[in-house]
Image (cartoon, rainbow, N blue to C red):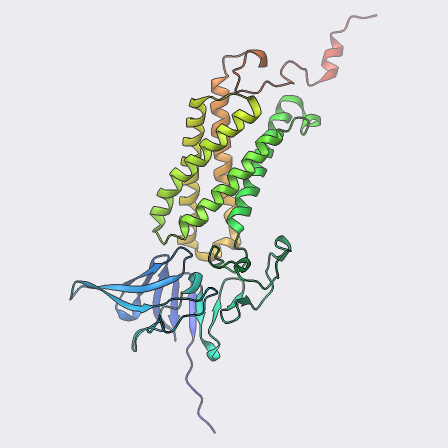
Length: 355
């Protein structure tokens, strides 16, 4: 009876991975803690797409950084072996398989494929093995395509949507703005007037600002910076986007421009955006990728967008709080068509003289 070849068994518990029932390492955004080497801290240097390029650690005995492995890629993730002589790591060193787009490279059966959260990528053909779980949103492309056939600009670390940050940002911006407008109409004119006064310009600007915020977040995260730096860079980015959004809305909607309101809205956007980035990072740090199944990123983005709109509306109300009606309101505060109307018509009939 032929002997069975040895095999390796890998188990995953959030960020902790076991190799043949032995703790192998704790993986995080900046690299891993190699538990097989006594808790050695190893760092992953990434490019703008989140591809792991150089894996290194600090040798305390010699007080210098030492390279463990180095990998360079063809566009769709296949290693360029002549430029990556040790992309599989040196003998005796357990390789860090989180490489192209930060996806785990799996070498079972000699296939050399990348296992993302939703699908399996074949770097030799540049295609996924499974259909895109969000194919209906990208009907112009093949459901097996990788990075919309543009791996130089886009990445898809989960295998579901290379443009998801833009789509989610635009959707959240549009939905929250619409909800606030409908809520204001119901409050001022009753349920029957919920959709009677919708500012299309404001919706368009909120949608564009949301998409721009998603684009900024997508590019900041691919710079290979720490989570703290992601938040720090996101605050000024969201501040600038908020100021542009406020300026555009004022000019197009009211044909006026209040500099103090632009600055105020920018600061609110920056602070609430920083809150959203921090909340997202903490959720992923403590709950791992499984957090996406319970609390998707759209929930956190939506919460921060609601906070932003709430604070901006509070500022508008405080600025126009001394005005009795819309005619005396500042130019940058829209007058309500329902301000002087009674909501309950029968109450008005009670005051009519008897005939």
